[in-house]
Image (cartoon, rainbow, N blue to C red; front, side):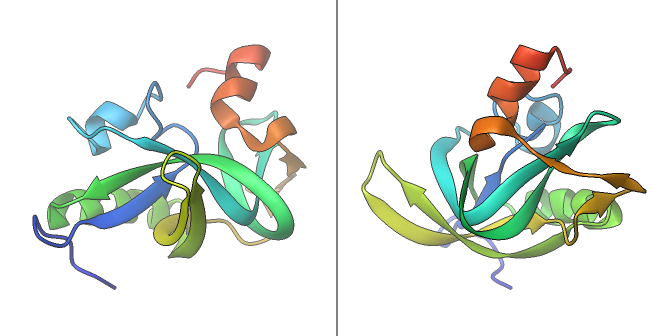
Amino acid sequence: MHKPSRNHPVPVVVYGTLRTGGSLKSYYFPGLQGEPVAIVDHDLKHSPAIPFPFLVPAEKYTAVGEVYWVTDPQVLARVRAMEENAGYRTDWVTVRSDLHEVEYQALAFIWQGSTAHGVRLYSVPGGDWVHFAHREGVAL
């Protein structure tokens, strides 16, 4: 795992409550500006009983995300601890930036399986949690 620094920022892709406008963004990524990206070969899942999404590996699917370039090792450690304590696995995924017309690897928090906390997961229409949450009235 790379250790972030000012000279070597680590890209971290988020897709739910850590995105801009999400309830956890300002706590975990204060002052950071995100870049919109597509998360390649991953599907975004949800359950009506759970107020946050789950990123799962799935070929030929694309999820909407946002990349933060993290330079502070403590910021990365805090967000990893929160996500891993909730059951997510931290791993590298491919993201595509239409803004810069490039694909690259970013750290992501990935869920394994088709259920979470005992309930079945369903695909988020369009793979965009923020859009879905606004439409469905789910708090971000």
